[in-house]
Image (cartoon, rainbow, N blue to C red; front, side, top):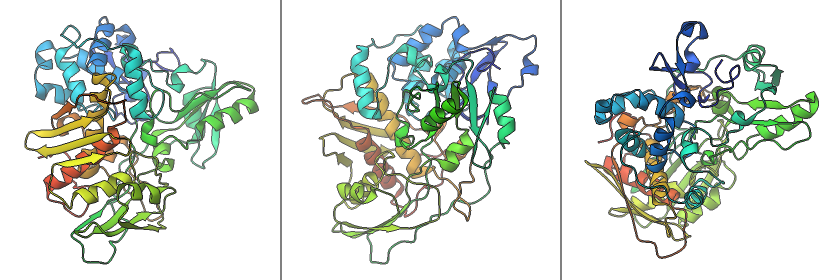
Amino acid sequence: MLRDRLGARTPKDGCSPQGQCGCCTVWVDGQPRVSCVTPANRVAGRSVTTLAGLPDADAWSRSFATHGASQCGFCTPGIVMRAAALAPAARSSPAAVDRALAAHLCRCTGWQPIKDAVRHGPAGPAPPLVAPAAGARRAALEGGVRQRVGPRVAAGEGGFADDTAPADALVALRGEDGEWVVAETLAEARRRAGKVQGRRSTVPVTWPLALPEGDWLRTLRTTWVEPGYLEPDASWCAPGGEPASALANGGAFGGKLTTDVGAVARRLADEHGRPVRVLMAREDVVRRGPKRPPIAAGVRADGTGTIRVVRTPGIDAAIAAGAPSLTVEQVDVVGPPTSSALRAAGTAEAAVLMLALTPGPDTVTTPAGARATAVVDDDGVHVRVRAGDPLDEVVLRSYVSGAAHMALGWVRSEALAVDDDGVPVDLTIRSFGILKAAETPPITIEVEPADRDAVKVGDAVFAAVAAAAWRRAGFPPTWPLNAPGSWQ
């Protein structure tokens, strides 16, 4: 009702609707509610407030922007609504903030900047905004696509495709048979498509590759991992026009580079002679989107070894870039699609294996000259980065924090169960194992002085923190460690 009938764009549709990501949070009579699972008849005669109607929305948006608590800006409006409902005393309590954020997911920022923004609140002291152009350059460098930064992005105005579609556009959803269904409204498209609400399965996680035979110092097996970006693939197009980019204000960690929603929007618009919105439900994203390719590897003390990997175009070169001494064996496995375009796929696995052969701390240096050193201990995660000119240190720190958070989840909790036919069966966004705020340790970041042009450092952070987390756990041979909620 809020998005399609009333045109409100600050509540975001991230889980379509599973009630699990928090992106659509609004107030009902001043209390935060997840709107996607709240029937309209339950709010009859009551007051509903979106971020656009929050009296101090601008101050909250500035606080989030100046603390680096918003990158793509998709999850932020819902988090702001939750934070704004907290009493000032509760904002100063880490436990209270963690409880409030338990209803939300954020894939980009690593939670630390969000906690800082909530603690300071809309009227608290905040670092000054750096020139938006500098922040946007750093964001584009780290995210891989052009991005906006600033308070308006924190308010959810990053230019997401489904937010910019004309009000009279037709809506297309993929049916259960895989064909696209077109209707006048989203509700009608869901009915015609026969959409079935996704569930978390009881199917156990499996590791699809056997270890190569050999006498190894270190071995590692990983499984299917979902990129977990919060904005589902979406586009729209007018007849004869160019489709809206599915990347919008974020790179989706490489997960949307092969999406077909833009091409489908163009085709359907031409067929129907009207603008068409093309949307993927969360379940479709999980079933059809690319995953991080699983590996099974063994390495010797001298750095030689074998790494088996689910067959993925480009993965040989990626592994060779991180560890040329490893022999790569690509293996055909029945499973979901994989991609070497996902964050540091192949290179991070190779770097982690090499780092496990030497004493810490764990340092990764990229060919471009970026460097990240990570330590995981009782006090949390400590990262030191060399990224050339920071451009905007707040934005840089936000991306470093986000990369550290993703690396911890990769090692400790993230996995995706698939059935015997290789089809993902964990279809809720909470089932991916993404670390929640309360499960994420403090992340401290040190930025080395700049002595060269800006370089991307997020992938180096991702690999270094993964290696440090593995080291902290004592190098167990299988990821994830299956200990969500316990980072010590």
